[in-house]
Amino acid sequence: MKPFTWLGLALLLCISAAPLWAHKPSDSYLQLTVEKSQVEGRWDVALRDLHELVGLDPDGNGEVTWQEVRDSRSAIIAATLPRLTLRSAGAVCDVATGALRIAEHSDGLYAALAFDGQCAAPVEQLSVHYDLLFDIDPSHRGLLRLELGGRTYSTILQPAARQFDVNLEQPALGPLFWTYLRQGAWHIWAGFDHLLFLLCLLLPAVLQRRQEGWVAATDARRATMELVAIITAFTVAHALSLSAAALDWLQLPTRWVETAVAATIIFAALNNLLPLVQRRLWMVAFFFGLIHGAGYAGVLAGLGFDAPTLALALLAFNLGVEGGQILIAAACLPFAWMARHQPLYRHLVVVPGSALAILLGSWWLAQRLFHIRLETLL
Image (cartoon, rainbow, N blue to C red; front, side, top):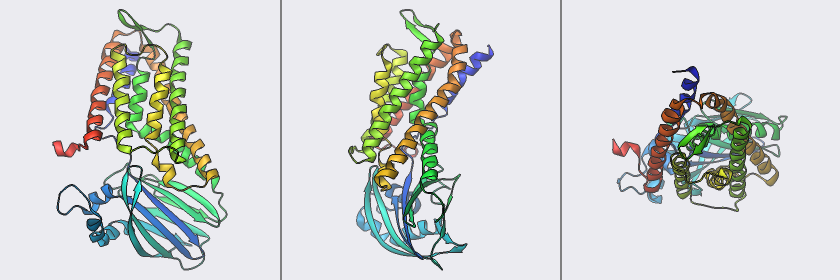
């Protein structure tokens, strides 16, 4: 087998690496407001995540009631607050818990825990160390919004970045832009369903469909421009629906959006095997981009940014999405182009890769539509 064929087969390996349980990342929302030496906080943690930690359904009927959440208050506090540390000028701030309520985000119900922090002196520098759920869910993220000195700061806390340091002299908007630029790229690279959809569009980009089947494309410029048009249409639509959701103009149930995302993967992969849509694929990508953008609906809206900050975060995130997709395409397309003449590329990459994508998409669709968990089948 020629080297370029092996490089083409890497695309199939990328697909097979996507986990069977791909879903919306686990997020919590942490809001801190600093006034002199006081820190007022609210921490929203998904009930599904708390159930993994403390078991919110003792009667095992599959439904979590407010009474069960209230009865678990002490266990919830014990499982969460030790995973959050606030320091000012090197000293740990004392934290006292307040009311526990239920809050609703785009992906379901959350326990909203209020707390107050008391630091030793007026805060000029604050360090936030976050370590919730990382030991059992590496995809978990803490979405932090911090108000200090009349400025709003934001970051995303994750296993590789568990601490956020901020001071009164630090600009707020520059770090925020880079944070959401990186998250936009990471949204594509780590969002297995989004990545799989992109790969389904990428696999046949170097081929042309004829009556006798797939044949190698002959015009590199045309193939590249068609792929750029597809990626750009997807990103523009993704940005439109994401922005509409973040601005609270569009509200869709997360379960149905994620189910529709799985359906787009099935359609894109099936289109590689059967000639469902042969022309103007960018229009299909645009329509599907609207669905994928809505799948990230609640994150930016849930942070409660003011209009200028939200606009900057949206711009950075969408630029990151576009850049992430272009980098993936730029890395894979040259190898696929060189391997396109090999029959093994068509028969061992495009066809089985698309078939595998259909199977994964079908599993995700059933999982999201009927709330199937993998461990219940084992």
